[in-house]
Length: 269
Ligand SMILES: Nc1ncnc2c1ncn2[C@@H]1O[C@H](COP(=O)(O)OP(=O)(O)OP(=O)(O)O)[C@@H](O)[C@H]1O
Image 1 (tube, rainbow, N blue to C red):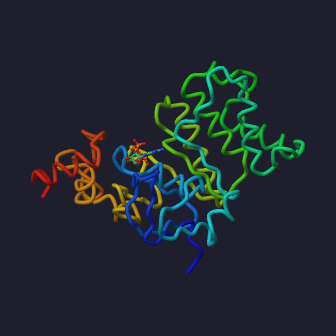
Image 2: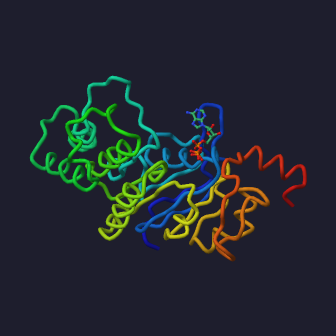
Image 3: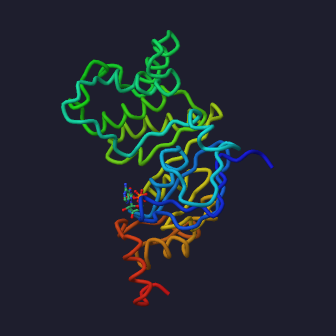
């Protein structure tokens, strides 16, 4: 069997005492786009943090690119949902994108020609080169989002992980990121992203459905079935699914606790 991007066995993820992902076993194939879906607070970002090596598993095993997370960290670029820089930080767009090179270059080694070229390419790809001299707090939310993706691209990687990359973006910015995602896969890279957009998930090669644990993992049509989506998002919250019409989320903010309450009250059989 070919090397998987991720192999998890009985994986448990916690933030302190708070278990965010209960025991889960699943596999993410190498290459293509994997979409991680699930309601708010279901554990999507937590899962990405563990794959990126930012969060240690509480228990179970997690293998990334055929080895340990620690050994493969530098092969993965991880763009967080929201990156917080202290207000007033004197950091330009170019500085932020340059930071993407530090995992490879180290903080002390001088920047090489290759580092500068990687930064320039990333700024161009994300169409933020005109903003390079601007300070981060002078940008709109969507522009900032593009800068963070540029930072991820500058790193140089085999796997690009994006936490809700499309949230809050206008159509032009969303298309820019969409183009990047597809360019990545044609270069043989793997992309893992979290999304609340079920149409975007349906277009992915692989889908992981999360709800306090990994409920299902596989091809979109295997995972995004009516019964799986209704069990996770709540009865009546969806019209259609992969085995019917396109689903429309009426209540995407339903938390796992709310779904559990509905299950206990008999609203979900
Ligand atoms: N730093 C933290 N400390 C404590 N609990 C946390 C922390 N980060 C997340 N959690 C909790 O872990 C659970 C999973 O959160 P996570 O951010 O992974 O969800 P998510 O599916 O990405 O949500 P969203 O769609 O709202 O971004 C939630 O119950 C959340 O409150």
